[in-house]
Length: 195
Picture (cartoon, rainbow, N blue to C red):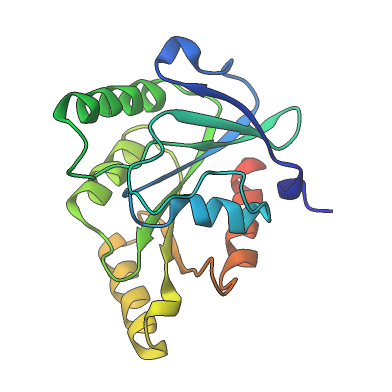
């Protein structure tokens, strides 16, 4: 039985004071509002509704903490880059993310979820920079790979690797087809082990 299938919701935070105690290890998931972050979390954990999916982008508005076991967690960060969210809310999210990244000792890795049809946007680059600033290892997951031809997917993967230039590892992923789930789990396990 995978530790990921035991994942359970712990709490949500709207401000730094509500974060869980900074102990153990956690891997955060970030991504544009419509990149398929919740679907990726659910596919990786094998839990259909652990993270709430929605047809409406921008549904994750809090930082959500999920327990894997007593010492390890997954953290679902608010989706970014969604234009229809009011400016005040976007500012709040930015401050919330800055608070989370600035001093979180338990953070041992970040999965950045990108739509394989539109990877490496300006807001994705900002998220990568935020992780780099605190020397947090990053793994980029190119979702919705099933919507590309095999040739397009390979070209996107190669181009993204070139753009990242060793700043992060990267893979293709499809929650719908189950593509890349084992690879993502292996990276997640390494990050949670502190490797």
